[in-house]
Length: 335
Picture 1 (cartoon, rainbow, N blue to C red):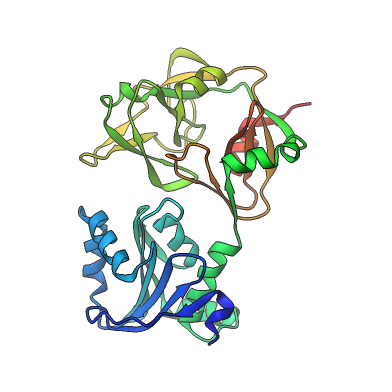
Picture 2 (cartoon, rainbow, N blue to C red):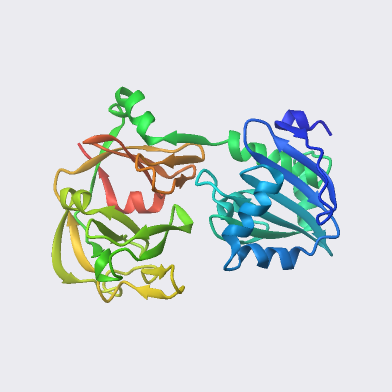
């Protein structure tokens, strides 16, 4: 197999505890893929997904001198995977979901994720893609993850492409109810919570403050918004959120980082309405796209073909992704 055509080179390493059979480094990224044997994968997976997972992850990544590590091994009639990441450039759960999308089982979070897929099902995929073996499949998919995707840095993109952005169609939110809650109405100032949005299923950390609000979307999804942006965009009311009247797909909730407790937001959230005239530039995505917001502390948005790239009319660096179904349900073209 010519690993070079996938952007990889052979990495010669020896770690007795892993019994490495093949090991490759992706050129241009601090990313290593290793096939191992005689590996107690279930024990190691729980080890890295457990409470001390962050420190364990860093230790293993340091051993391989990389920021992203994919370990693969065979267990009975399945292929198993363990992926580790220590940066916000790649979320572990999202990466593995891409590698074995629709065919495998994946669990984890932003820093560590595990996956499993039937060897028989994977063999069909390998044959359909005209590849030689399992390792070639993983290398091909890893390359595709990076290359078959647009990576947008909002700060730079908004400035360098301002003229192009302003040629996009304009859209405004329809006059339908959304909901909001002040983060400090849920937990004390300074406490961290995890919110899971449709564009970030592994969850984003949020620190409660007077300047941070939590929005509840039309399906029950939650995401953060600054107090200043909220006040520019929405008219707040004292009307309480009624999840049955609003016909939400699921109950909005956040997770406390300190103890893992889930807090329902439907008892404390109030309705709000988009202010008239506030709009966005929007365009339908043709390729898988990652958007890294201008706020460096925020996780990236992940968009898929059919979703919409949105840019605020009054700030070309305020760029995000709106899932297709939600966009069509809540926005209309500004004539």
